[in-house]
Image (tube, rainbow, N blue to C red; front, side, top):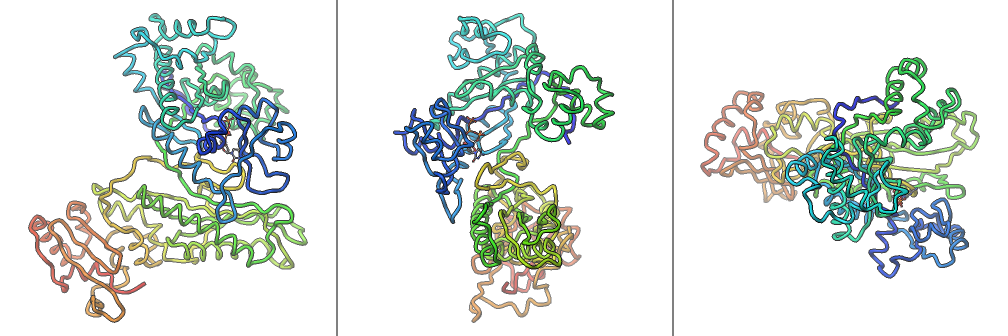
Length: 611
Ligand code: DCP
C-alpha cells in the first residue's frame, strides 16, 4: 500500500532520467553500423524469432512493439535488424547492459543525490546544485543558454507557439518568476548539461523529466522521447493530472486502480479531486486515502535515496511450456548455472564495492501433476548466504528441496517447475577504518551465521528484495541499497572470505566482539596444537604485530586488524588479561615490535583449524 509523505519541501528540484531504447543503444554502440537503422534486441530463444525486449525508435515508426516476436517484427518492418541478447550459461547475460547503466550513473551522480531506480533509470535531487546556480549564475545572466535546455518542453508554456525556443528562453530567464520556478529553470539547464555529457562520454541518449518531486518527474520523463526533456512547473500540475489515466501511475496499475474506476468512477488522476480526504480514507484506509488525496494534487514527499548500487542480486530463468523442468537433476543443473552467475556477482560486488551479501533466497514457480490446490504457490525460501560457488549451489538446492517438500505435501506424484531464481540480498558495506569492530560485527551478525547451513532455512522474508534477472524485464533497482559510496579500502578485515570460512553457525545473533571471537574455531586453549608453517597439513599460520596493527595469516587468508581501527569501548568487552594486552599493544602500536606466538591476544584471535 502506498504511504503518503507530505511534501514539506515544495521547492525541490528532482529529475528522472531514463535512457532511450536502452539495450538497443548498447548494441548499437557495439555495432555502430546499426545506428539510425530500425533495430531490436531479442531474447536468445529462437522460437518465432525470439521475444523482443528493446525496440529502436526507427523501428517503432514501422509499428514494431516490444510485445512482438522477431518473426512478427520482420513482417511489420522487413528491414529491421534483430540483435540477440548475449547469452551465458544458457540464459540472457545482462552484464554489458548493467555496466553501461553504471557508466551513465557515474556521470549523472556528479551533480546531486542519485538513486538508481532500474538498469536504465535514475532519480536526481538537484536542489542544491540549482540553488547554487541561482545564486552564482542565474539563467538570465547566462549569455548562451545551452541549446539542449532551450529545446525543453515546459508544460503550460510551449506547444502551439512556433517560436518554442524563444518561449523557453523567456521562461528560463524570467527575473520576476517565483523562487520555485527559478529553481526549476536552473534544474532545466543542469539536466541539459548532464544529458550532453552522457551523450559525449557514452554515446547514449536519454530523456528526462524535471519537477518538484519524484512522481511528477517520472511522469514527465516519458512524455517526450527520445533525447528530450520535459519540465513540470507547479502551475502545470493540475492540467497534467486532469487527463492522466489512473493506470499510468505506478501504484494504480493494479487492484487499487481498478477499484477507483469500478467503485468511484474515477478515470483520471484529476478525477480524484472531487473526493474529500475523509471520503478516500473511509474507503481505502487512512494511509492510502491520504496518499490518493495527495497525488490528485501532485503532492509527493518521497525522497531521492542516495544509492547507486543494487540492494540485491538476482538471477532467474523461466521454463515455459514444454521446457518445464520435471526432474530433480534438471532443477539442479539450472540452479547450478544460476548460482554460478550469482556467485560471480556477489564476488565482484565484494571486490569492487566492498559489500557483503547476507541472505540467499530461492523463488520458484511450480505445478503439481494432479493439482487439487491450484492456488498453492511454491514457497520462497531463504537462508544465510555462504560465499563460494559450491556452497551457494549446495544451499540453493537444499532450499529448493525444502520448498518442494512443502509444496507437494502428500502429493508426490509428479511436478514441473516453470521458473527458478536465486537472489542474494541484505547487502551491507564492509565498514571503513573509522568504524569500530563492534559496529562491524553487530551489523554482521547475520553473515556470521553463514557457516550455518540449512538449519537456518526460513520462509522467504517479504522484505528480502529481488533484483531479478529473468529472461524478460528483469532488473529492478527499485529495491536498491542505501549508500552508493564505495567504502574505504582500509577495511578492518582484509578478506571477508577468511572471515566466512572461520566462523561457526552457532554465532548467530551474538553481537559482541567477545562472543564473536570466543566462538571462533580455536580458542586459546587449543593454541598449542596450532600447526606451523612447516606443518605437514600445509598451513602457513603466521601471526605478528606490526607497527600499526596485528596480522594473522593462514594460507591465502590474511586478517589485518589495525590499531587505529579499534574503538576503545570495544576493548572493554574483552577479558581482563586480553584488555591489558590490547591496551599495551595500542600504547606501543607506533613502535614496531614482534609478538611471540604465545601471546594471549594472538592465541585468543587464532585461526587454528582448517575449515
Ligand atoms: N527490458 C527487458 N524486458 C522488458 C522491458 C525492458 O529486458 N519487458 C530491458 C530492455 C530495455 C531496458 O530494459 O532496453 C529498459 O527498459 P525500458 O522500459 O526503459 O525501455 P527502453 O529503454 O527499451 O525504451 P524507452 O526509450 O521507451 O524507455
